[in-house]
Length: 273
Image (tube, rainbow, N blue to C red; front, side, top):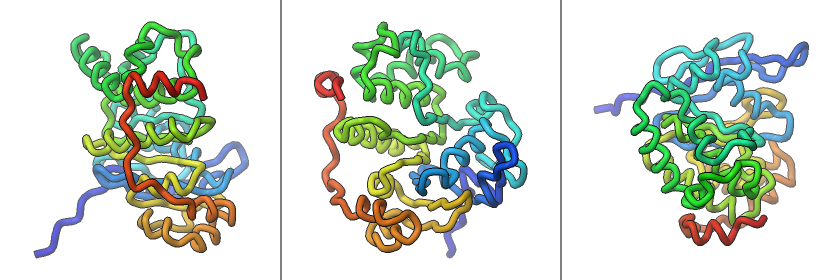
């Protein structure tokens, strides 16, 4: 007896997108299944960030369709997309620097605002369990946090909407390797709890080592897709699409042992980048 096909959680079909007269995406199609971890890689300007922006409603495609959980979401506003179950952590975090950590988390809970205060408290406590240092910094302004702590807050704020899909743009940007390892471990825990993950990452080997499948973009189009482990094992294949520098990065050894979980003590030691 054949196993029935699982309907994709996210189904993007042949989308085009423009910035003024410049076409940024050309017929991009991709799918994410429930609970999957997907990497979107490519050279600068390949269309990775634009793809994420079209999914989250920040940029409306001119052609194609976007379905989430079996329903069309193309044309929805960003807040409506969040309400459907997609959270987007953009490149640069875009925190409210003058607000405290807890106030930023409350902003992330906005889509759930009709629920009781107890729901906010419970969700806040769940994300602070993932990032103990944020509990210590709860009353501190976001703009005074270290770069690593700000990225932790960015992920935590995105998780406050209790998404079924979390999309992350450049998780490692400007951060020390130890912090990046902690963040990827936390994303793994989030994924194991049932949330699908889609990540754009400048370090190709990190993206492939921490995902199930990957899509490679070039000049606004998907030029390759497949299992992340297979791509990671074939640097020549990566070089043919992303260049020798990316291939060299992909050849770097990937730790087989998970990094130690973030605790208040270890996070405090890594505040300074």
